Length: 172
Image (tube, rainbow, N blue to C red; front, side, top):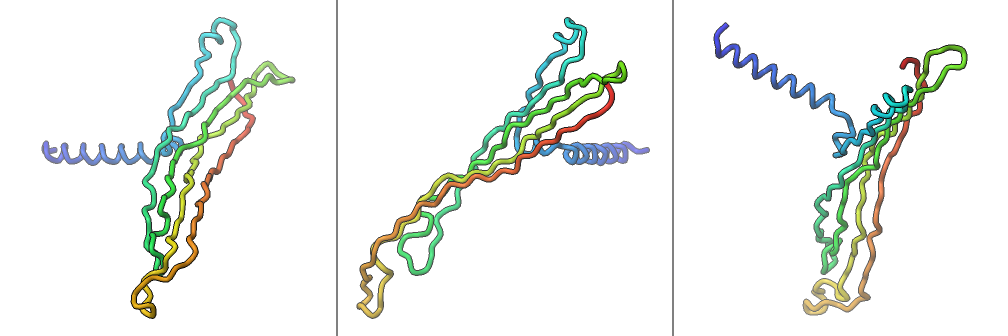
């Protein structure tokens, strides 16, 4: 095989391996979490018994870009004069696998709880304002007409879909 063919083949295999690794990434990695293992191996060895396996995930918040003001026909001031700021983060995740002694045998079954980190989307409060004047009125020689001022508060938003799995299984 020529060296250029080998180099091309190596580059293709590297790209395929990188794509397979990216496809196998967990949803927790997509939202930006830091895994937090709880090491209990030393306690297991000193007590001579099987202890639960515990771990967690701490989310990393990240701010997004706010939606800018938008002009609306018939208003002097743009809509969303004070925009809402989006912040994306996640709910912390947890994983627990604990031994469950069998009543009729000397083996162990395990009970497991998996609560993966889930996305949380928030929008801060904003304001919508309108001036006490209308746009120029051609019937009034191009002068604006007076009107009542308008002010409103855009409510904050919180959106999340948490979930958890509880299961039993055989084995050590």
